[in-house]
Amino acid sequence: MREITIDVEFKGLLPALDEKTYAMLEESLRENGCMHPLVLWDGILIDGHNRYEICQKHGIPFKVEEKEFADRDEALIWIITTQVARRNLSPMQLSYYRGLHYRADKRIVSNKLGINRQKLVEGQIDPQPKQTTAERLSDEYNVAAKTIKRDAQLSEAIDAIGENSPEAKREILSGSAGITRQRLQELAASGTEDEIKGVAESIEQGTYEKPKKAESPETVFQGILDALNGVMDKIANAYSAELRRAENAGEAEKLRAALRGHIKRLQDLYRSI
View (tube, one colour):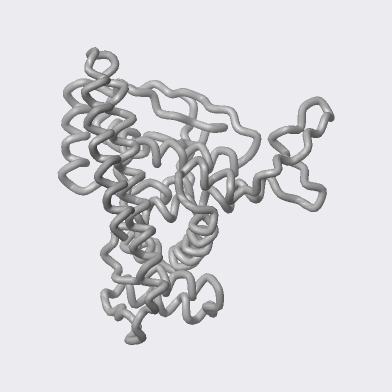
Protein backbone atom coordinates (compact mmCIF):
# COMPACT_ATOMS: atom_id res chain seq x y z
CA MET A 1 0.00 0.00 0.00
CA ARG A 2 1.34 3.42 -0.94
CA GLU A 3 2.42 5.87 1.72
CA ILE A 4 -0.19 8.44 2.74
CA THR A 5 0.90 11.97 3.59
CA ILE A 6 -0.97 14.11 6.12
CA ASP A 7 -0.93 17.79 5.16
CA VAL A 8 -1.26 20.06 8.20
CA GLU A 9 -3.13 22.81 6.33
CA PHE A 10 -5.59 20.42 4.68
CA LYS A 11 -6.25 18.57 7.93
CA GLY A 12 -6.76 21.90 9.73
CA LEU A 13 -9.60 22.76 7.34
CA LEU A 14 -11.79 20.02 8.75
CA PRO A 15 -14.04 20.79 11.75
CA ALA A 16 -13.02 18.62 14.69
CA LEU A 17 -15.48 15.90 15.70
CA ASP A 18 -16.76 16.00 19.26
CA GLU A 19 -15.97 13.03 21.49
CA LYS A 20 -19.38 11.42 21.09
CA THR A 21 -19.38 11.65 17.28
CA TYR A 22 -15.80 10.38 17.09
CA ALA A 23 -16.67 7.43 19.36
CA MET A 24 -19.68 6.56 17.18
CA LEU A 25 -17.51 6.65 14.05
CA GLU A 26 -14.90 4.45 15.74
CA GLU A 27 -17.53 1.91 16.78
CA SER A 28 -19.01 1.84 13.27
CA LEU A 29 -15.62 1.30 11.63
CA ARG A 30 -14.72 -1.50 14.02
CA GLU A 31 -18.04 -3.27 13.46
CA ASN A 32 -18.57 -2.66 9.74
CA GLY A 33 -15.12 -1.86 8.38
CA CYS A 34 -14.19 1.20 6.31
CA MET A 35 -16.93 1.23 3.66
CA HIS A 36 -15.96 4.50 1.96
CA PRO A 37 -12.52 5.01 0.36
CA LEU A 38 -10.09 7.60 1.62
CA VAL A 39 -9.46 10.31 -0.98
CA LEU A 40 -5.90 11.22 -1.98
CA TRP A 41 -4.31 13.81 -4.21
CA ASP A 42 -0.74 13.00 -5.21
CA GLY A 43 -0.45 10.84 -2.10
CA ILE A 44 -1.81 13.55 0.21
CA LEU A 45 -4.94 12.72 2.21
CA ILE A 46 -7.69 15.23 1.37
CA ASP A 47 -10.76 13.42 2.72
CA GLY A 48 -11.14 10.84 5.49
CA HIS A 49 -8.68 12.00 8.16
CA ASN A 50 -10.72 10.66 11.08
CA ARG A 51 -11.35 7.34 9.33
CA TYR A 52 -7.66 7.01 8.50
CA GLU A 53 -6.66 7.68 12.10
CA ILE A 54 -9.11 5.09 13.45
CA CYS A 55 -8.19 2.50 10.80
CA GLN A 56 -4.50 2.92 11.64
CA LYS A 57 -5.25 2.54 15.34
CA HIS A 58 -7.22 -0.69 14.97
CA GLY A 59 -5.60 -2.18 11.87
CA ILE A 60 -8.78 -1.82 9.80
CA PRO A 61 -8.25 -2.26 6.02
CA PHE A 62 -9.33 0.60 3.76
CA LYS A 63 -9.38 1.53 0.09
CA VAL A 64 -8.18 4.75 -1.47
CA GLU A 65 -9.43 6.88 -4.35
CA GLU A 66 -7.11 9.21 -6.25
CA LYS A 67 -8.19 12.66 -7.41
CA GLU A 68 -6.34 14.74 -9.98
CA PHE A 69 -5.95 18.50 -9.62
CA ALA A 70 -3.79 20.99 -11.48
CA ASP A 71 -2.38 22.43 -8.26
CA ARG A 72 -2.82 22.85 -4.52
CA ASP A 73 -5.46 25.57 -4.83
CA GLU A 74 -7.73 23.33 -6.90
CA ALA A 75 -7.35 20.60 -4.27
CA LEU A 76 -8.15 23.16 -1.56
CA ILE A 77 -11.32 24.24 -3.35
CA TRP A 78 -12.43 20.60 -3.69
CA ILE A 79 -11.98 20.08 0.06
CA ILE A 80 -13.95 23.26 0.84
CA THR A 81 -16.90 22.48 -1.44
CA THR A 82 -17.02 18.88 -0.18
CA GLN A 83 -17.14 20.00 3.45
CA VAL A 84 -19.79 22.68 2.81
CA ALA A 85 -22.02 20.18 0.99
CA ARG A 86 -21.56 17.43 3.58
CA ARG A 87 -21.55 19.06 7.01
CA ASN A 88 -23.96 21.06 9.14
CA LEU A 89 -21.70 24.11 9.55
CA SER A 90 -22.06 27.16 11.80
CA PRO A 91 -22.32 30.65 10.21
CA MET A 92 -18.69 31.33 11.23
CA GLN A 93 -17.48 28.11 9.63
CA LEU A 94 -19.45 28.83 6.45
CA SER A 95 -17.96 32.32 6.27
CA TYR A 96 -14.47 30.91 6.75
CA TYR A 97 -14.91 28.33 3.98
CA ARG A 98 -16.40 30.89 1.59
CA GLY A 99 -13.49 33.23 2.28
CA LEU A 100 -10.92 30.48 1.68
CA HIS A 101 -12.69 29.51 -1.54
CA TYR A 102 -12.56 33.12 -2.75
CA ARG A 103 -8.85 33.50 -1.96
CA ALA A 104 -7.91 30.20 -3.60
CA ASP A 105 -10.04 30.94 -6.66
CA LYS A 106 -8.46 34.37 -7.05
CA ARG A 107 -5.02 32.79 -7.06
CA ILE A 108 -6.14 30.47 -9.86
CA VAL A 109 -8.22 32.86 -11.95
CA SER A 110 -6.80 36.34 -11.70
CA ASN A 111 -3.69 37.82 -13.23
CA LYS A 112 -2.79 40.90 -15.23
CA LEU A 113 -3.79 39.32 -18.55
CA GLY A 114 -7.14 38.09 -17.23
CA ILE A 115 -6.21 34.49 -17.99
CA ASN A 116 -7.98 31.67 -16.22
CA ARG A 117 -5.44 28.85 -15.80
CA GLN A 118 -8.29 26.36 -15.59
CA LYS A 119 -9.22 27.20 -19.19
CA LEU A 120 -5.79 26.70 -20.77
CA VAL A 121 -6.32 23.87 -23.24
CA GLU A 122 -3.69 23.04 -25.84
CA GLY A 123 -2.43 26.61 -25.86
CA GLN A 124 -5.86 28.12 -26.45
CA ILE A 125 -6.96 30.82 -24.01
CA ASP A 126 -10.64 31.48 -23.40
CA PRO A 127 -11.45 35.04 -22.31
CA GLN A 128 -12.05 35.45 -18.59
CA PRO A 129 -15.78 35.38 -17.69
CA LYS A 130 -17.43 38.75 -17.21
CA GLN A 131 -18.48 37.83 -13.68
CA THR A 132 -15.99 38.63 -10.97
CA THR A 133 -14.85 35.87 -8.64
CA ALA A 134 -16.96 37.35 -5.84
CA GLU A 135 -20.04 37.51 -8.07
CA ARG A 136 -19.62 33.94 -9.27
CA LEU A 137 -19.16 32.60 -5.73
CA SER A 138 -22.08 34.68 -4.51
CA ASP A 139 -24.27 32.75 -6.96
CA GLU A 140 -22.76 29.45 -5.85
CA TYR A 141 -23.28 30.11 -2.13
CA ASN A 142 -26.45 32.24 -2.38
CA VAL A 143 -25.00 35.24 -0.54
CA ALA A 144 -24.08 38.78 -1.64
CA ALA A 145 -20.78 39.43 -3.41
CA LYS A 146 -19.89 41.87 -0.61
CA THR A 147 -20.38 39.05 1.89
CA ILE A 148 -17.90 36.89 -0.04
CA LYS A 149 -15.28 39.67 0.15
CA ARG A 150 -15.90 40.19 3.88
CA ASP A 151 -15.56 36.43 4.34
CA ALA A 152 -12.17 36.60 2.61
CA GLN A 153 -11.00 39.20 5.15
CA LEU A 154 -12.36 37.12 8.00
CA SER A 155 -10.59 33.97 6.75
CA GLU A 156 -7.29 35.88 6.45
CA ALA A 157 -7.53 36.94 10.09
CA ILE A 158 -8.44 33.45 11.27
CA ASP A 159 -5.53 31.93 9.34
CA ALA A 160 -3.14 34.56 10.74
CA ILE A 161 -4.31 33.72 14.27
CA GLY A 162 -3.99 30.00 13.45
CA GLU A 163 -0.35 30.45 12.44
CA ASN A 164 0.32 31.60 16.01
CA SER A 165 -2.06 29.17 17.70
CA PRO A 166 -3.90 26.32 15.95
CA GLU A 167 -5.93 25.88 19.14
CA ALA A 168 -7.12 29.51 18.98
CA LYS A 169 -8.20 28.96 15.38
CA ARG A 170 -10.19 25.86 16.37
CA GLU A 171 -11.90 27.81 19.16
CA ILE A 172 -12.86 30.62 16.78
CA LEU A 173 -14.39 28.18 14.29
CA SER A 174 -16.18 26.28 17.05
CA GLY A 175 -17.70 29.55 18.30
CA SER A 176 -16.17 29.34 21.79
CA ALA A 177 -13.53 32.09 21.39
CA GLY A 178 -15.90 35.04 21.86
CA ILE A 179 -14.26 37.13 19.13
CA THR A 180 -16.57 39.10 16.82
CA ARG A 181 -16.60 39.27 13.04
CA GLN A 182 -15.89 42.98 13.27
CA ARG A 183 -12.75 42.36 15.33
CA LEU A 184 -11.52 39.72 12.88
CA GLN A 185 -12.05 42.06 9.94
CA GLU A 186 -10.16 44.81 11.80
CA LEU A 187 -7.25 42.45 12.38
CA ALA A 188 -7.23 41.50 8.67
CA ALA A 189 -7.30 45.15 7.59
CA SER A 190 -4.83 46.75 10.00
CA GLY A 191 -3.72 44.33 12.72
CA THR A 192 0.01 44.17 13.44
CA GLU A 193 1.86 40.89 13.92
CA ASP A 194 2.17 41.58 17.65
CA GLU A 195 -1.55 42.39 17.90
CA ILE A 196 -2.56 39.21 16.10
CA LYS A 197 -0.16 37.17 18.23
CA GLY A 198 -1.62 38.71 21.38
CA VAL A 199 -5.17 37.87 20.33
CA ALA A 200 -4.14 34.29 19.50
CA GLU A 201 -2.43 33.81 22.87
CA SER A 202 -5.32 35.29 24.85
CA ILE A 203 -7.86 33.06 23.07
CA GLU A 204 -5.71 29.96 23.68
CA GLN A 205 -5.27 30.88 27.36
CA GLY A 206 -8.97 31.67 27.81
CA THR A 207 -8.32 35.31 28.75
CA TYR A 208 -9.62 37.02 25.61
CA GLU A 209 -12.09 39.82 26.32
CA LYS A 210 -14.33 41.47 23.79
CA PRO A 211 -13.53 45.15 23.08
CA LYS A 212 -15.62 47.53 25.17
CA LYS A 213 -16.54 49.62 22.13
CA ALA A 214 -20.09 48.89 21.03
CA GLU A 215 -20.64 47.67 17.52
CA SER A 216 -22.29 50.11 15.13
CA PRO A 217 -25.91 49.51 14.06
CA GLU A 218 -24.60 48.73 10.57
CA THR A 219 -22.30 46.04 11.93
CA VAL A 220 -25.03 44.55 14.10
CA PHE A 221 -27.42 44.54 11.13
CA GLN A 222 -24.77 42.89 8.92
CA GLY A 223 -24.21 40.25 11.59
CA ILE A 224 -27.93 39.49 11.56
CA LEU A 225 -27.91 39.22 7.76
CA ASP A 226 -24.86 36.94 7.82
CA ALA A 227 -26.50 34.72 10.43
CA LEU A 228 -29.71 34.63 8.36
CA ASN A 229 -27.68 33.69 5.29
CA GLY A 230 -26.15 30.84 7.27
CA VAL A 231 -29.58 29.62 8.36
CA MET A 232 -30.91 29.82 4.80
CA ASP A 233 -27.88 27.88 3.54
CA LYS A 234 -28.65 25.10 6.04
CA ILE A 235 -32.34 25.08 5.04
CA ALA A 236 -31.46 24.91 1.35
CA ASN A 237 -29.01 22.06 1.90
CA ALA A 238 -31.49 20.15 4.07
CA TYR A 239 -34.34 20.57 1.57
CA SER A 240 -32.11 19.49 -1.33
CA ALA A 241 -31.22 16.27 0.47
CA GLU A 242 -34.82 15.64 1.59
CA LEU A 243 -36.16 16.35 -1.90
CA ARG A 244 -33.91 13.70 -3.41
CA ARG A 245 -35.12 11.18 -0.84
CA ALA A 246 -38.74 12.27 -1.33
CA GLU A 247 -38.51 11.88 -5.10
CA ASN A 248 -37.27 8.33 -4.65
CA ALA A 249 -40.20 7.65 -2.31
CA GLY A 250 -42.76 9.34 -4.57
CA GLU A 251 -43.55 12.07 -2.00
CA ALA A 252 -41.81 15.04 -3.64
CA GLU A 253 -45.02 17.07 -4.07
CA LYS A 254 -45.76 16.88 -0.33
CA LEU A 255 -42.31 18.30 0.42
CA ARG A 256 -42.71 21.03 -2.20
CA ALA A 257 -46.04 22.04 -0.61
CA ALA A 258 -44.33 22.39 2.78
CA LEU A 259 -41.57 24.47 1.20
CA ARG A 260 -44.13 26.75 -0.48
CA GLY A 261 -45.68 27.35 2.95
CA HIS A 262 -42.29 28.41 4.35
CA ILE A 263 -41.71 30.71 1.35
CA LYS A 264 -45.10 32.37 1.89
CA ARG A 265 -44.27 33.04 5.55
CA LEU A 266 -40.96 34.61 4.51
CA GLN A 267 -42.79 36.79 1.97
CA ASP A 268 -45.26 37.92 4.64
CA LEU A 269 -42.34 38.78 6.94
CA TYR A 270 -40.61 40.69 4.13
CA ARG A 271 -43.72 42.77 3.40
CA SER A 272 -44.08 43.64 7.10
CA ILE A 273 -40.56 45.13 7.37
